[in-house]
Length: 501
Image (spheres, rainbow, N blue to C red):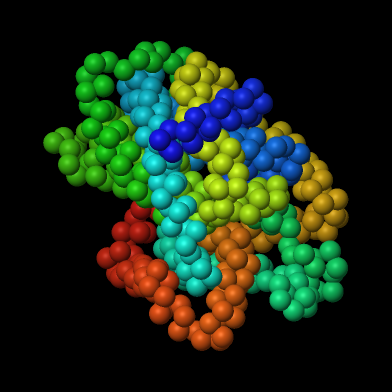
C-alpha cells in the first residue's frame, strides 16, 4: 500500500499544470539535442543548470530528467535516417536502423525504436519506484565508513566504464578529486588551493566547471569537425509496424529492457554499455545472425529498449543514495545542491512530493515522447540543415549569461573559459572527461566521510574493513579494478567503446 500511495502522490505532483509544462519542455528539448549530433544531453544540461536556480526544485529536476531520457529517443532518429547517432548510446541503432531506412522501412524502424523505448521506460520507471523504498531504508543505516566505501565503488566503476585508456580515466578521477579540494577546509576553515582569490573560498563553481568541460569544449570540438549532413529521404511513410514486425520485436524488447535495467545502475556509461550488450546478445542467440548489419529488427528493438531502460534506472543510485551513476546524474546532483537540497536517502523522507514526483514524471515523459516524436519527425530532420556556425554563437552567449547569473561572479566566466580549454585539450588527448566530473562531485563528499569516519574511530583506519557493509563494498571495488585489467576484459572493453574513436 505504501508504494501505491507514494505513486499516487508522485502522479499528483507530476500532473500539476506547471510540472507537466516543464516535463514537456524537457522531453522536447531532449529530443532536439538528441537529433542534433555533437551537442549531447550532458552538455545541454550543463548549459541549462543556471536556469534551474529560478525554478521550483521539483520542476527543475523533472525538466532535466526529461532532457536526459528525451535525448535517448532523439538520438535514434538521426541514427536511423542519416546514419549519424545523436547520442553515443544510439550508435548501435544506426547499424541496422539505417539499413532498414535504405530499404524504405524508415517509418517502421522509427516506430519500433519508439515503442521499444516506451515499454522499456515504463518497466524501468516502476523498477525505480519498487527499489526506491528498500534502498532508501538501507541507505539510512549507512555510516560515514559505508558512504566512503560506496563512493570508492562508484569512482572505480566509472574508471572501468570510461572510454579509452584505463590509466587516463584514473588520472581524470584524480584530477576531479583535486579540483574538489579547492576552497575552505571543512574542519579547520583554512583556504586550500584558492590562489589567493577570495571568490574561490567556497570552492569552484560546479556550473562553471560543468559548462566549460562539457559545453564549451563540445562547441570547440564540433567547430573543428563539422560534417556535411545529407538526409536520406524527404518523407517518412509506413510508420506502423506489421504483425510480423511485432512478432520479431517482442523478445528483443523484453531482453533489452532487462539488460538495460540492470546495467543502467552501474556508474560510468551504463546506457551505452547496455545498448552494446543487448546487440551482442541478440546477434548471438539469433537463428539468422547473418541478417544483423543488413536491417535486422532485433538489432533496432533490443538496443533501443536497453539504452532507454539504462537511462531510467541510472536514477536509482541518485534518488536513493545520492550517488551519481554518470555525468548527467552528477549534473542532477549539482541542480539539487543549487536548490539547497542535500542528495541522499533523506530526500525521500523529508521531501516525498519531490522524490516521487520525479519518478512519476518519467512515465509521463515517456508517454509524451511516443505521442509527439513520430508526428514531428519531419521537423527534427529539417533542423539538421541548420549550419553549426549559426548555432554556436547563440549557445556561447546563453552559457555565459547563465553561468554569470548564478552568483553574479565574473571569476565564474574566467573558470568557464579555462575549463572549456581544458575540456577541449582532454578531447584531443583522448581523455574521457566524465570521470573528472564524477570525481569533482564526489570529492568533497568522499573527503567529508573519510575524515568523519576517522574521527569516529579515533584515527583507526581498520574501521573501513571491520564494518561488514564497508568491507564488502571495498572488496567489490578491488574486484572491479582487478577484472578490468585482465587482458580478455580489456580487449572486449575496447571493442565495446570503439565508436568513440
